[in-house]
Amino acid sequence: MTGISLQHLTKQFDDVTAVDSVSLDVTEGEFLVLVGPSGCGKSTTLRLCAGLESATDGTVSISERDVTTEPASERDVAMVFQNYALYPHMTARENMTFGLDAAAGFSGSEATERVEEAAAILDIEDLLGRKPSALSGGEQQRVAIGRALVRDPEVFLMDEPLSNLDAKLRVQMRAELAELHAELQTTTVYVTHDQVEAMTLGDRVAVMNDGHIEQVAPPQDLYDAPDTRFVAEFIGSPGMNTVDATLRRRGDGSEVVWGDNTVPLDVPPDDLGLASGDRVVFGVRPEDLAADTDGDVRMEVTVTEPLGSTLLVRGRVAGHEMEVSIQPRSSVEVGDLISFRVDPDRLHLFDPESGAAVYHSAESREAIGIEGDGHRAAAVASRGEADD
Image 1 (spheres, one colour):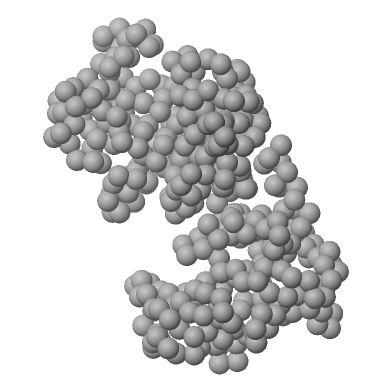
Image 2 (cartoon, rainbow, N blue to C red):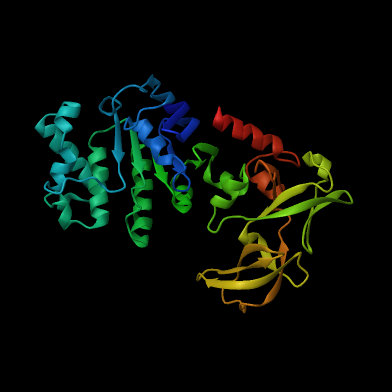
């Protein structure tokens, strides 16, 4: 059964299209994350699901029931907001039960029982008598989640609920949200701009850009075989390096050339639907380059960032900024000239005009079950399914 189905959902604010014909199915019990940069339409999409915004066009269905024109109170969803939205003059218990009788017809004892159960799940039993001003940010967020839990909705909608927490607490709350979903198995749509949060929480992740969905896939599939250049650059911390280059024939295969850097590929141009001399966008992730005196890529180092478990090196490669993740405590300084070898099994090509994926090399294809040398057809098909 489908938990939520969006079909050609569109929202316009005057002459601005915030959500542009989005179609998306969220299966029952799934934890789906909407991720993208600020202003991409993800929060508006969530508010359309909740009934807090009215659709300009398209439909919203919950449990196979069309709720497009129904008010938020009749959709059987519970929303957790970024700012917690707790009433400051009420205790945590009162915040969790406010409106519960009217909304769901519970008796006082039933409401009390539900609050106690939710508090036990969230480990906030000792906080129920406190007002929000006496709670930390993490405790307030637990109360906000508890308020959603007591309603036992068909769908949880969460709009960047962890963005106001400090880094350590965000990591802790991510783990707790994952455990909570594993226990309850309630259909959940979660909005964030943090791609690390998206990758660690989502069963699937929908990447949004400029009001439409670029790709919907399990987190590792997004990372290994992004459908578009935008997804490649957005997913990952840091994202994929991409450079404008030229594809040339080289024996039975090809080579990608920009400046004096040459990277070989194991597939000829015609197998990709391209010709020798065509422009392409070459992509490689920072961890897929290794320092090698005979390497294919030569970088002038401009910045080094020690991250403990790795050393992130930034620099210029034939006029393009690139980042490389290397072994910590490596002797690298600003101004050094370093050669890097590119992992031949972890290369990517994108169309310079459309941004669509043209090629993912062997290991990336095998990771998600793509057969053959090219990825153009798979990328186009996947993009079409997301937008239909």
